Image 1 (cartoon, rainbow, N blue to C red):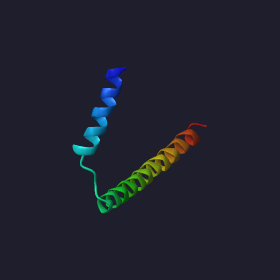
Image 2: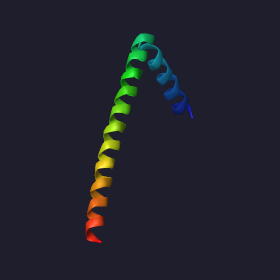
Image 3: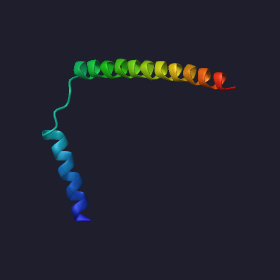
Image 4: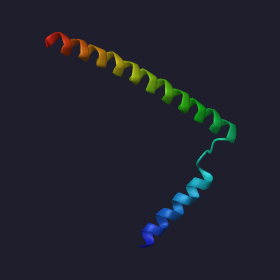
Length: 64
């Protein structure tokens, strides 16, 4: 039990002293970057899905 409390104590101390936390403006800009990147990635995946959907419709309609 002592090792568990020691682990959490050392972890908390490291979070206070060794971790470099971003400033609020850095956090905002990084969050915006992640949001824009996620939206662009979603749009690319959506476009690929539409292309494959149309290809599959073309394949299945010509096979019937």
